[in-house]
Image 1 (cartoon, rainbow, N blue to C red):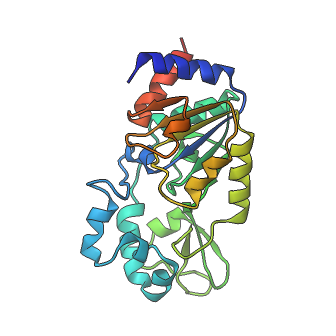
Image 2 (image 1 turned 90 degrees about the vertical axis):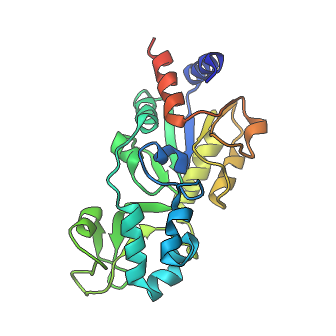
Image 3 (image 1 turned 90 degrees about the horizontal axis):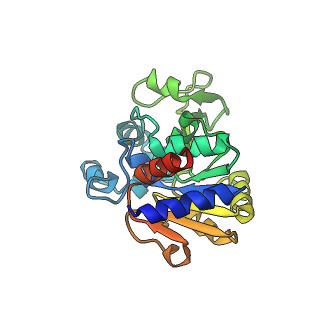
Length: 247
């Protein structure tokens, strides 16, 4: 990690009044959660299920093979993880009035766990569940207290995670809020995402602010527009940033 880049990053943050963070799976892998496409990711581990993650995590698969869906879901998305240095740094920047919104493709709720208040979860959340038949609401704890397919107490039908499955539309209010936040930002930090998942990744095109920072171990299609590109772990970069801001 280049020391001069951290100093420049800190100067940009000090001069910014409206920072927005757009993040993906790389933010959560440092908390021990699997991403999708790395060597140790879900795509490799899922071979035992005889289907791709896109198939299992689809609207049709949930309703046709609910038991198999929840077996996969519990294995990969009910892991007890803690917020890492990146989550904590972003929450601190919000507390200081610098960061105005976090826009995440992740569904793990670790930004909120770290203390972030304004979070747009583009793909939903594993923290909440709804019965698609009667509309009864449940929390993650209800799922943890059950085994197999969790049934609605009210009507006994399977409840569904408040996660956007393949074949489902993103929530209009979340999309509108995220795009509005990006379009108003004076600084956009893109972290832990290759910007390969659409339509979510396309939202960064609405950024017209002064400074763009990219923190990702592999190349993204926004690198050429960025003021600074870090190829280091996002937790390491954000920790170094906060250390500099605190001096």
